Length: 600
Image 1 (spheres, rainbow, N blue to C red):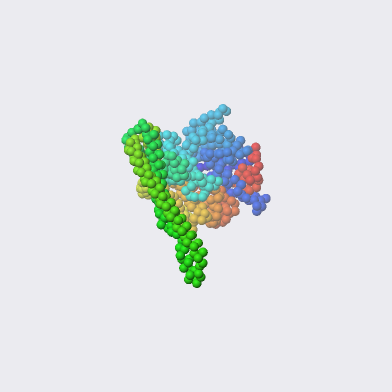
Image 2 (image 1 turned 90 degrees about the horizontal axis):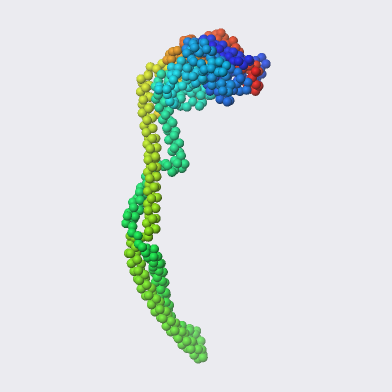
């Protein structure tokens, strides 16, 4: 339990708590207007102070390190190990990781103090968290050599977040998470531990998630080419490797049968020139054949003009040609016959010449082809020494590439097998989780009954269930209430039901355990005043049953509406300290939104 929360800050309002229900109200100051807000009154800050004194980290943006605060201390009287002790902490640099206690209180709970130069006694924040974890949640003070050694084991800070949810860390968004950055593994391990289930199974799920995350990142890097030299897919690598190995076999055979010819270069040059000459002669033969064919057609087409037809044409027209004209036609006809004869003689000579050239080309073709064939026979299976070197270089390159491909194939197969293996492990872990739930049916039933009881206290017209189920990703926890799911008042009451159940379970499992539950007013945002009243009454009943506390911060108007709806007078549980929304009415004695330095 918590008895007092105080500070060396002169304006800080020391808050004292009693057992049972404790309601800290934030009121509207007399000078307030409709534009004032109670968001700076200090309700949420009270939860932050409690967490600070329970070992929470204080980063550079923490209110405990802000100007004016870092030079002051904050203190809390807390009941632990059947003793009331006063612990103090400061945000001052180089001292913010120390928890200060008196010699008397340290001795009462078995803690050994270190000393500052002025003799002031302290323990490290890590020791303080380990001590609280051991006292309140049966965690080992020294984890070395226990199942709690290593990553993903439950820690005090993981667990305490469910008993004092922090709004600034989004601790009221989901029943199973007490902070926005809380990872699935942390949720599953912490809740399994609190409920008495086997928390090592969800730890194994977390290990598998980490492996899957690395494997996924690796596959993405392979897909995007960042690791193309090392990885690939097995389906892509195998055919490439097969082609490379086939090329190696061919090159090896060529090298094994290779003979070096001393005149290889000279003969290869001759063969190349003969090949070119054969090609040229082949084209010459084709051209000669075409020329002969063309000239034959021209020879056959040569003939004198048909002058008789001219005379016949004139006679048919009834015109008598004079004798002079007829003689001229005869002379021309004789001349044309002579020209034709000469043309035919010329074509005959050209045809004969082209045939002789064609015959010579044909003979050259046979000769050149034969010479080239003889040279190629001499070079068959042989080569120049430089060619052998090139073959060996190509062989070495392909052997090296094959080794690289085999390595890539091995990596790809290992990656793919790992993913397949993780799927199998997930199924196996899910089965183990189901078996564990069967073995711990009584514990799940106890948690379910406590949630049912809380729901029945809040609602007459609604039912709900606590669902704890196994899945391929680990245990899942949720509460279903009719009409919920829209981030409204019913969803906030799911958190209330869940937290009160955890308080009862923790008290029953870890005696002596922590005996308090702290809820910020934001838990009741959007909740009907009747349900707020019932929640306060039920929270009191739970606190009374375990001899502990239910600490609630509320706005005054919300409280008055709830009080009017309650059969139990709630006024007597209101803290004597009243917070207000004016400049000096807040927990720290000034409004944070006014950006004033804290009083010295």
